[in-house]
Amino acid sequence: MTRLIEEAYNPESFRKNGHQLVDLLADYLVDTRKNSNLQVLPWKSPEDMAAQWKTDFSRSLQGDFNLKTFCSHVIENSIHLHHPKNMGHQVVPPVPMTALMELISALLNNSMAIYEVGPFSSAIEKIVMDWLGASLGMDKKPGGVLTSGGSIGNLTGLLAARQHKAKYDIWEQGSGNHPSLAVMISSESHYSIARAVKIMGWGENGIVKIPVNERLEVNPAALEKSYRQALKEGKQVIAVVANACSTSTGSYDPLEEIAGFCQRNNLWFHVDAAHGGGAVLTSKYKHLVKGIEKADSVVIDFHKMLLCPALTTAIIFKNGENAYETFSQKASYLLNPEKRGNWFDIAQRTLECTKSMLGIKIYALLKMYGVQLFADYITGTYDMAGTFAGMIKEAGDFELALEPASNIVCFRYAPPAADLQEINDINIKVRERLKEDGEFYIVRTVIDDAVYLRTTLMNPFTSRKELTRLLQKIRDNF
Image (cartoon, rainbow, N blue to C red; front, side, top):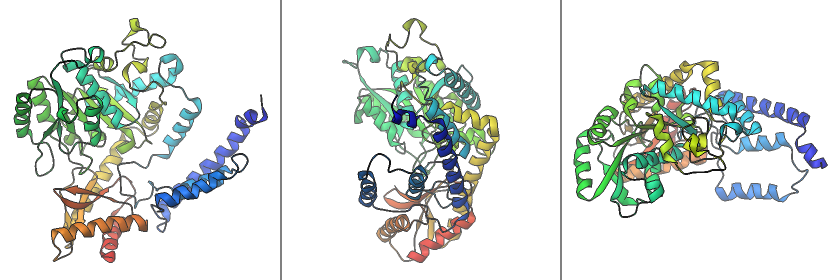
C-alpha cells in the first residue's frame, strides 16, 4: 500500500476535517439568518467564475489544498438557499440534519441495485414508500422507488403507462406499425413531461395539449374535446398528466375531475406533484390535491417542499405491481427472472442501477421531527405567499398575475402611465439588476405574453420584512 493510499483513507484526518467542515457550515447557517448584508447571489459572469477556478486548478494538483479554505471559497461563491432573501427557484434550503445523512450515504456508498449491495437502505426505502402511499390515501397496495429527480420520475411513470396501456409489449416488440401513442398534458406542464414523451420516441405528435382556464389550470370541460380530436387524428391516447402544482405559477389542476375522465376512458392518470404534492400532509391545504389518491402514478420531489437536499424524488404507483412493468428486461447477472416482483431488488423498477441511499434522509426527518415538520413548513410558506399577494394588491404600482394557490407568487412592477411593452421591458431589467446586485434572488416568467417577476417562497424564515424590502428596492431602482 502506498503512502498516498494510506493518507487518503486515514480515519483521523477524516475526523479532523469533518469537525472543521461541520463548524464551518454551522457558522454559515448563523450568518445567513443574521447577516442582512450577505449577498444571496455573489454574482460573477460565467466566464469570470470559470477563469477564477481555472487559475486555482492550474496550480500544483497535489499538496496545494486546504480543505477549510477551499470549502470557505465554495460557500462564498454559491447561491445561499438558507438566506431569507432567496426567493428564486423551487429548491428547498435543506434541514441541516439531512446533510449528515448525505455524508453517511456517500461514505457507505451502498449502490442499492439489489438487496445484498444495499440491505439497510433497501428496507428503509420500502418503509418510506409505504408511508408515502398511505399518506396519499392510495387504497390498494401502492409501491414505488426513490430516484434522482422529477425528470426521471416522470419518465418512469409514463413508461409504466406505455407498458400498461399500449395494448402490446412495446418494451420487447418496439412500436412497429402500431398507432401513434400520445399523452394529454396541460399547456402549463413542466418541460420534463414533453421531454419524456420525446425520449420515448413519440415526437411532438405524441403530445396533446389541454387548454387551461384563466387561473392556468386544466379546464375539465376541454378534456373530452381534446381527447376526441386526438382520436380523430389517429392517435392512441394512453394517459393524462395533471399538475399539482405547475412550475410557472403554482396552480393546481382539478385532480378529482381529471381522475373521473381517465376512469371513464380507461386512461392512465399521472400526477406531476413534484412541487405541490406535500400539501396532502397539511390540514389547511390538503384540499388542493383532492383526487391524488386516484392517480395511477405520482411524482413528488422531497427536495422541493419536503426539506431534503437534491436529488430526492419519489415515483409511486397506486398499484405497486405496475412498477415492475416499466423495466421488464432480463439482467441475468444481476436480477433473477424467476424472482421478478421482489420489492428488495430495486433495479427492477428504476432507470438507475446504482443510486444513493435516498430513503435515509426522509426516514431520519420523520423519526426526529414527525410529519408535523412537513406540515408546518408547507403551511407557513403557502401562508406567506398569501400575505405577499395581499401586499402586492395593496400597492398601487404592482400587479398580481393571479391569486397564488401555493408558495409561488407571480407579480410585476407596473408604474402608472406605462404601456404593456414598457412594463415588460421594465420587469426584464428589474430581474437582471436584482440578480447582479445580489441582495435578493428572484426569477421571471411569461404569462400570456406578459413578463412577470416570480418568487417562490422556499425559506421558512422569509417574512413580511424581507418582502417589504423587496418591493421598495424595485421601486428605488426604477
